[in-house]
Structures are given as structure tokens and as C-alpha cells.
Image 1 (cartoon, one colour):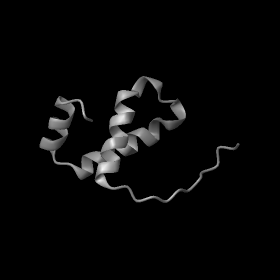
Image 2 (cartoon, rainbow, N blue to C red):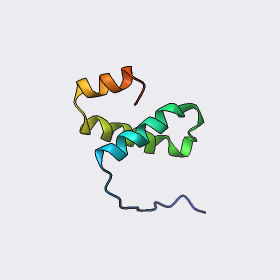
Image 3 (cartoon, rainbow, N blue to C red):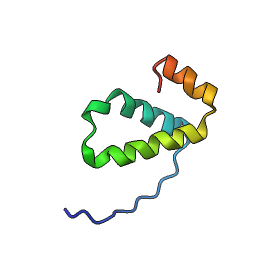
Image 4 (spheres, rainbow, N blue to C red):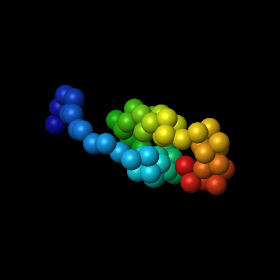
Length: 64
């Protein structure tokens, strides 16, 4: 396998992004270096879908 870019087109719902971000956040220490940029992008997109209050509430309740 090469390091050439691979394009994948998928339109996530905010709920899917929130769920994915939650899994990533709960497993931060297990994320391989090769997926860290992807994990950061997911987190950034979640912040775009949610208000600051929603993010704070989710973080407080460890849902995110």
C-alpha cells in the first residue's frame, strides 16, 4: 500500500459526526499516528455542527 491520497466521499449527519467524535475521544490513546489528522478533522466538524453550549454540555456528560 502506498501513501498516495485516497478520496472517499461521504456526507455525515451531525449525529454521525458526534458519535464518531465520541468514539475517537474515548480512544484517543489508541489512535494510530496515521489517523490523527482525520480525528482532528472530525472534531472540527463536530464543533461546526454544535453550539458552544452543546459542546460544553456533551463534554461535561462525557458524551463527546
